[in-house]
Amino acid sequence: MLEVYIDGSTTGNPGPSGIGIFIKGEGHHIKISEYIGSCTNHTTEFIALLRGMEEAQKLMPSIVSVRTDSQIVCAAIEKRYVKNAEFAAVLEKILPIIDTFDLFFIKWIPDDQNKAAHALAREAVQKKLP
Image (tube, rainbow, N blue to C red; front, side, top):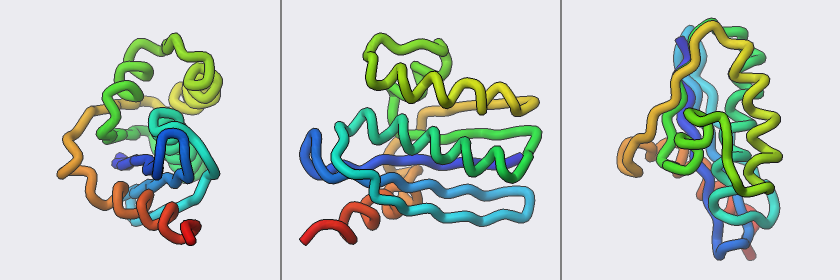
């Protein structure tokens, strides 16, 4: 089983944004910190999940458990729907990837349990700021 921790960070809303992804399990320990340009805070969270799922898919696990501190992302995945068109465009890319796993779980966690992904997301933004 892979555990995938995701987070987005935005300076301003919208503003310079980064994503952080921490993947562990099945002999893997992967850290991803990427600057993604100017986004809103919620869009950044959806993009973090998309990138996390793309990376997880490369490892071909049968079970993936995602942890996020974004309630909107967690709810969108559970319902497989979101009203906002910008979020829906990213969700449409996420769902087919999720469907490739035998089992997929997503769980909301408080910020203090998502420190690794949060630090990676903040690092991505800080590298781009003057």
